[in-house]
Length: 238
Length: 329
Image 1 (cartoon, rainbow over the protein chains, first blue to last red):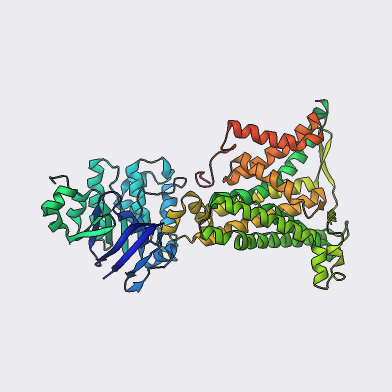
Image 2: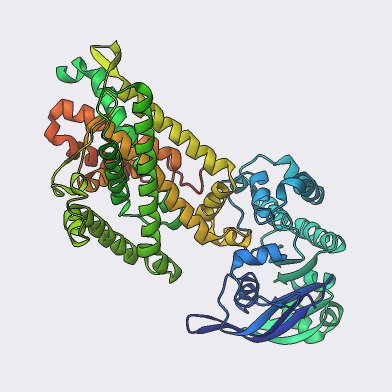
């Protein structure tokens, strides 16, 4: 297993944001966490990146205990995240943002042009905008930049938090097909989504979070076909 | 009014000299603010310690004014090195003692500010009582030239004699004027390049723009914070030597007013904005000089702070506005 999360509990002050969640991510797969707003999806990803303190439980990555490791130490291990709300550096250009993505890599100078080429290959739009200040780009372009930036560190595990949020339907399709492409290139993906229909379509396995707890597990296909899941998360029809 | 017109060139040059010092000290406030959104109130003492380091180097070397040029340059460079080292060291010490724990605990900014004010008083008094400290250590006699009359002005004997270089508009611009203004601009350019081009510089910008996103990129925030304090301290050390070359005296509590002025310059230029710091320094230095020429030199500080109030009323983000984070610098 690439990632094993066991009995994870995280608090915000005295409020339990996630409670005793256990799941795992297999190398080479796409795993998705779906659920309503406030279910604890984003908290889970933040915790995996070391941005939230763990109250109880453990996180193992490639067999190594990283539960209490600092954020910046996880990036060189191969955990990278495209966070909720994109969080690109608004005052930096597109290329500078991508360079920030490679910040933790010791050999970044050697692989820089190949890495940029790969990202521009996935997102040709970014090449057109390469010297534009990232803060002045559209939401969709910023989302592409956030994903591209996360790829610059050569992650083994890519955490994607709501990559489709606020995007036009056509763009959503595009982002999901790129996520598939990234997986085909060999990167394992843990995807958090409110757009459950799309997420289940590409996921090998899926977990449903409700108020901080995992309530359902299955393959993407199983959950997408399940009546109660359809009613609760897929708005009836897919 | 006629006094202002008759002495316009002199007021301008000395205003720029003063502004250069304000600007370099302002960098320390602006950098730390950019990264931590925190006013490092004790930065004035970082400057003050640097000024004493510069004085003590010249005392120790005992070079008289008018020595051969290579010696003069050597002494000044040593004084610069000492001032930058001591100021940088004090800045790092401040980060360690007055801030680090509070930052880790995510304490309210007000708590950090109070801690900074306390550190500022403690450092100033430590310098003002250095004769006692030397006494406890049994070094009162050995260190006499350095700790004598600890609460009075301490003179800096500039090994470089002030000489006129060229005259314009009835004022003779001196070698010291030129050195100060040019070095301030050069240091500013160097810092700008450092922030733009180096890995640490990018880390500083990233933390300033979005500290959590920076952590996701693998930026070690604590290291960036230390680098920021160190760089600000080094700039303050350079400012200390330049100040002494022009104004010739320092004092255990000289940091206070200079610090408030430099902070004003930082806010004037747009706090968090590196280029704004130097601009704010120059604007403040010039305004002080022109203002005191117009209504009397006892109004100097009133002019400076009135300018601050007026600019903030009409442009709350300062002259260049954008912060270290937002600005494309």
